[in-house]
Amino acid sequence: MKRFARTFAPASTAAAITLLLAAAPVAAQDGRVRVGDLNLSTRSGAADLDARINGLAHSMCRGARTASSLIPDKPVCHDAVRREVMRQLPAASRQAYARARASV
Image (cartoon, rainbow, N blue to C red):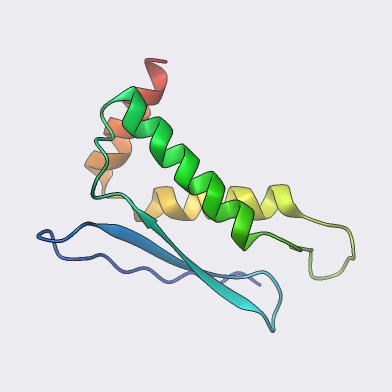
């Protein structure tokens, strides 16, 4: 079961993305990715966001397993975290990030 929640800070403060991921029905975790201090239209800004997402996914997906199995399912969890962060980015930020990554 996956649950996601999002919040955005006002424009005057550093923007952040907050997500709630339930890796198991009993243990829900939430995480936060700061994005307000990044220039996502640059390669270094996009790389910094990637590093933050990877760090969050690493910490949130420890021990992630599918509901019906004891086999670790970290790749699926990591993908879910990345997708949710991208979903919560404003469209203009997603586009700038994609252009910066494509220029690498």
